[in-house]
Length: 82
Length: 333
Image (cartoon, rainbow over all chains, first blue to last red; front, side, top):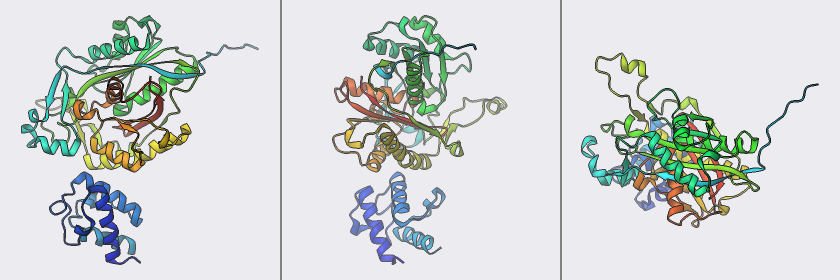
């Protein structure tokens, strides 16, 4: 089972690839929109890449609840454990 | 035993010429931002659109179609009388019946060619290419005129934040004719009616007219869900199309996706891992999203600008309301 830190690191690589945000900036307390400047369309790209990477489903309805990197990591952890 | 004759078609079909018509009025983002509490910067960042064309009162669906068709026929070296069928893809001809295609066929001067409209929204032009190609190969027509045309401004609310800055007007036409070599590859097409609601007219006409003060219905769209479907599901369809045609992304010269949103184009290109040498259509920056007209308009611009050359291998992929999609690999005329 992947640790929180491993998920965060992989997610950071995705955010970097999609939105050009330095991977080191993608920390658990950061807001995608306010801190990392990831807009809603880029967020969709991040979500789709995360679904493939982590083998989870992130429905459109859920995406708006993923405000911070920590929210996304927690959702992925829950999905993998579920 | 009675024997029936069968029609005999050409060995293959190809695009002989492409023509376009862009409405004369250029509408920059600044003209639209107040009504939707937005900004030029926001629109460009979200869509890549800098300006679009809005049709004037005289630039009707029929008028724009005829203008684009005349150019396509001239470039194909054909007379209108040589057109055996006219297929018009549109969702913005405001007469329920008859099909605008018959009036276009008449005004062009075809010899009473069969003519009909198809409703496949933004995917309409590639549906038309598939029909035209099969008609030429099946022998029901030698030359088919396929037109994609829209006056989306007639069914767009300039107060709708999700669509006002996206949709626009224009026409593009392609003449399809016989060929010894494959000029239009196999189509990969389909629909996903489970997502019927994602892009649609907001209300049924009967519901509109039942209101005290009926207002023209307009297009509505669930942007994020459409973005997800268009960028990723369509990248897979693009790959299936290459596979079915027997080529890879490395063989492509030109990529002409429906000009829905520059962000969708970019996401698709990334998902498809398009090599750097493939030139990507970006007509949307100056034309907006013209639904069925967008692919011939975009390819037409690339030909006019010298970005796409005769014989180049182009992937065309169209997708939109329905959800409906269709894609082919074609040779640039």
